[in-house]
Image 1 (tube, protein in one colour):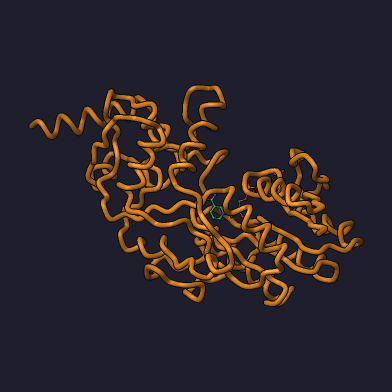
Image 2 (cartoon, protein in one colour):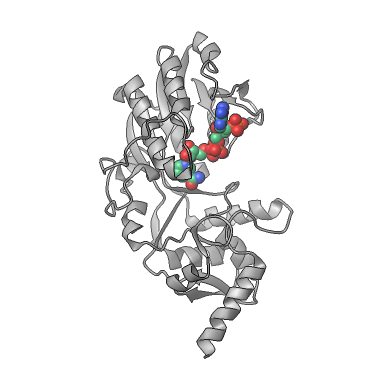
Amino acid sequence: MKLLVLGGTGWLGREIAARAVGDGHHVTCVARGSGVPGGTASFRADRDDDAALLPLAAERWDAVIDVAREPGHVRRAVRDLAPVAGRYLFVSTASVYAPQASPGADESAERVPPLEADTMSGPEEYGPAKVACEDAVLTGFGPERSCIIRPGLIAGPGDPTGRTDYWPWRFAHPARPGEILVPDAPELPAAVIDVRDLAGWIVGCVGRRTSGIFNAAGPSAPFPDHLESAREAAASDAAPVAAPEEWLLARGVGEWAGPRSMPLWFADHSMYGSRTPSTERARAAGLSFRPLIETLRDSLRWLEAQGDGGHSGAGLTDADERELLALLAGQADR
Ligand SMILES: NC(=O)c1ccc[n+]([C@@H]2O[C@H](COP(=O)([O-])OP(=O)(O)OC[C@H]3O[C@@H](n4cnc5c(N)ncnc54)[C@H](OP(=O)(O)O)[C@@H]3O)[C@@H](O)[C@H]2O)c1
């Protein structure tokens, strides 16, 4: 097939483009940068420019795969490419769902309202922006020529946010011997999908001309089980030391991602359902998952191969980890 990947220089987009080439497709990647995978053609364009994709509309494409976040990027791509492309696969997100969704909800669950603007004004508009992108694709290509994938948290080698490799890395590098600070959240659901499983399935969907809307979250496990897989992946004998959620929040420890955070944790229990959507439809369409420990082990190897010896982007620094563990131990002793 002749495929246009809108993206291809980032993480998932790059994995998709590389996988598509490996499966024998002819791939052109569209991005501002030029770091596209070997075997793909690069078309450099800035999608903020209204006419950026017009030269590509002079050719025919079997399918477009798009990882964009900005509604304007998708609206213009749909406008320009609907006449010349057979299908459009859009990589959306589970963040399109209203936060209080019930556990196991399927793809018909309520979404947040779409963003009307072409450009997000901040990260809090990510969900509404992706809803607007989905709507543009479904309107422009019609449901029969559209495929909307809503991934949950993506993990695996190369995570640019550092949030999914923090736990195996922390177990491999305890800041205080034998102890790892974790949130006391026994019911917290943790679900990650390996970037390689997701990319392979996405390319397969395009090849099979799959239409529809699909949740693509990884299998859900209680957070303590996720941590145990991280410990095993790191071959560590360190033990988790659980800190109460309110205690962490009161000390300025953030949720989910970013610096001074407990990655993958969120304190609002009413949001647990929104992180565990049904993936029955995607599994029926061929999505499968490698074991979590393989994802975490490969992520740790990738991180350690980067050679700087540290972890950045998410979690606690060694100094913060030591300080908080000491504080917690001091309070327990009193
Ligand atoms: N990470 C997660 O856990 C998670 C979960 C759910 C869904 N998702 C979705 O998964 C996808 C992740 O894809 P990714 O890792 O490839 O994303 P990414 O790293 O953010 O890459 C975005 C791509 O778009 C290109 N791009 C950005 N602005 C552009 C512009 N103005 N003009 C042209 N190209 C532009 C970038 O290339 P240049 O910068 O070179 O232009 C890059 O190739 C996203 O759709 C995200 O919403 C992620």
